[in-house]
Image: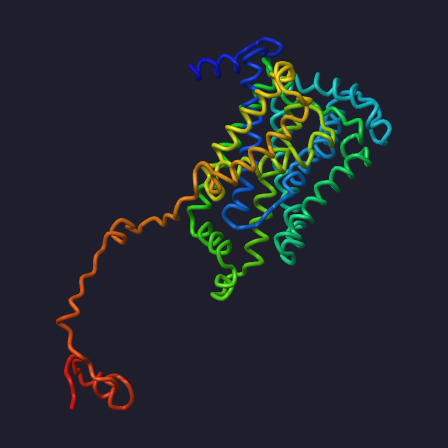
Length: 405
């Protein structure tokens, strides 16, 4: 049945899906986005102990990659293809001529499907690179600050990213925002359906990548750093370099969600990347599902995403039930759920499992019984293997059970 629904959505030729289908597409899209962010957060905090409170920074970098880089590249290539666009080099023209230029660009993409796909791949690649660069920038204070101060710094960095987007029109149109070309204009059905399917596929790939890495020797090294970084450093491991690599890789993956969200809306504005939405909700998903557990993170994303989208759809009904404005219900829900989970399920719905190392038979190790009959032992004279006489005893093959005068 689910396969028939998915096939029907993908092959639909209607202008837009509506009703229950729209809700399904919306939940699928946001589920895919939050899986990417929450899995990367679990990779950093749940397994390496790095409390990244700046997820919104990496997501907004992905969105700004589309608005500041991809859109300019598309305009340039479309003009090279013979399409006459309105001026867009200056900030004023970039903002106010944007709707006309995007409309002309969409007409070109409608007949050039490969061009649309290439721009999608370019955007994902650039967001991955720029997200990793931001991860390197974040790692600079992460190396020197403790967890509490690190969280404060990362929270302020998320606000700073929004301030840049709000005051520099060349990035994302300032406070007005800006439209971006629809790279799926060639698709005969609803483009949001195709965007949701691509997002789910990328989220699924991210899930298996993180799962493979965490079950590898590198994943065991990450957990060792989380438990006791001094011990890991004492055996010659570069703890600082490992943390930097973890932040860079996870930041690059997180930035993909910002790019996919931009293409889903075909619009970018800094207000779409608020700290509460892209930092606090992923943290709640991680804590609800269980830190250090990929399956728990997956479950937490599914539950929270479905619950939030149902609340948004039914706000008119909920307004008649609650005594306070329903606009605050999501924030109240976030706080209440966080308190309840910490009180009753501090390890999450699916607690972290013991680390499994392939090739080791844990059953035999646990069930192994060592029987020692202390009554049949003999007393060994002290000093049997110590001193000069001990050396001669060992080299001469003398048994430790033989007593000496």
